[in-house]
Length: 228
Image (tube, helix red, strand yellow):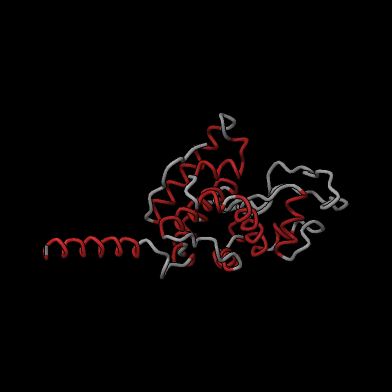
């Protein structure tokens, strides 16, 4: 009986150690997104890319601090997967932080009484997630305390605001999907659902490739449901 009790105690200790080793204690977004991790991404952008001078780890971290739930999903595994997913989409959307503004720029104005388009302003994609449409600029600006409806180009001229806009969209639409175990594939649907179901298979493949790559760099498995 004594040997059995010792075995039970060992099993309990093993379980507790396993839980603590995957907790978020001692982890932070800044300790996961190291200068080496961030710079490895942006270094792949061409020398003529305006984003190389615009996107900075320091402004990313400043925006992350304003969104304390980002990268703190209850376990190191979930937290790292969320961070890997965020950077996978950002990499794809901006070409390794090359682009600040969408290449094919349009008006992107939907009639709205709540968030009416300002005269002469266009709401094409800007920033790390390429925020698009007047209703997103309006709601995002209200949330972060900036009049983005009147001045959407703040997302392309102020790096901290640019990352804050990306986090606003992410926390509102994507955060719960990846942290609840829905898989990376569901995040693609939230970012650009038109790519799914055969819409743009090459784009989906590229996003998944980046996600796998960043999971590997962060030392975490990518989990299930990778494609949409």
